[in-house]
Image (tube, rainbow, N blue to C red; front, side, top):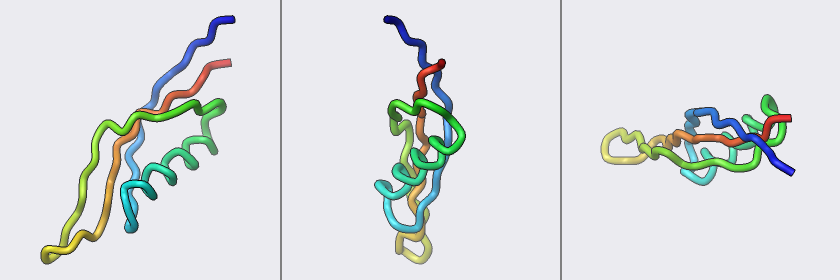
Length: 67
């Protein structure tokens, strides 16, 4: 049996960690997209204020299987 997947790009910000940003992004994508099968972390960034990290951002390429 064959399957076809599509990829969409999302950006997520967390005030906790990169891991949290990825988890939040996958959970949110799954609310809108059916059959989310994985994601590739395309980019990571941090925000800093006065030398302290204040935010973590990731750009995800989310894959989902088409029906």
